[in-house]
Image (cartoon, rainbow, N blue to C red; front, side, top):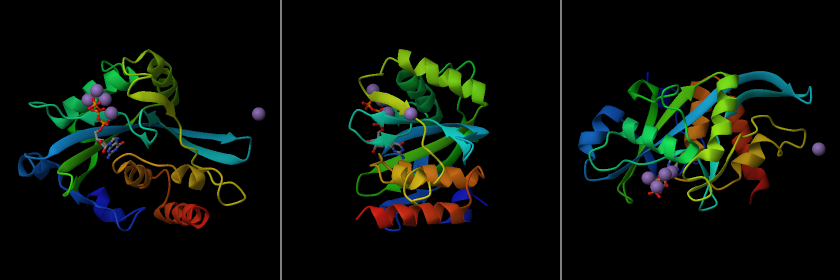
Length: 210
Ligand code: GTP
Ligand code: MN
Ligand code: MN
Ligand code: MN
Ligand code: MN
Ligand code: MN
């Protein structure tokens, strides 16, 4: 079963993005613009202030347009999505592709936005915490740092006592493309969070953001 079938719709129930099969999408939607983005993550079983489970370090970024997203970008003519993703990873976070390289096996889900003629491909890559920190450090030397990208961030994955601060508050940010749903789906697919935990956090966020 594809992970997107297993977990159904996460986050915005009225999303304009519909899931499409990766294999089909490249030939079937050849007239669309394609983009590829990737989530690099490391499991982290340490506790924050001896209180909250970290669960994982996840690499997201503040984009030039003030919204959050994953590193990645548009697929150029003649490029396949995975190749585009690796190129964008170099441009946006200065990743060392001799150590961390995305391929088709890392693909998680693809979405079509019919009105925008846009197909968005999403990948995940697991590294260990030491590698994750090294990837974070290298980001400052990226070609696009300060231009397309305004810094990497780790989403907090715990919820604090007021049922808002932490993960629900993080989810109240603005997100590029379909990156919020991608984050939620990836958290489920990697077993970092259960679907129930995600639904609770999404509801908590909605209650506070009217
Ligand atoms: P340029 O080189 O300036 O063209 O930017 P780029 O190639 O880096 O493209 P960008 O990352 O902005 O991605 C292109 C489109 O994908 C954007 O217009 C967004 O709609 C969408 N997008 C951006 N970030 C994400 C993301 O994390 N996930 C998804 N699904 N879509 C995203
Ligand atoms: Mn302090
Ligand atoms: Mn880019
Ligand atoms: Mn980009
Ligand atoms: Mn680009
Ligand atoms: Mn660019």
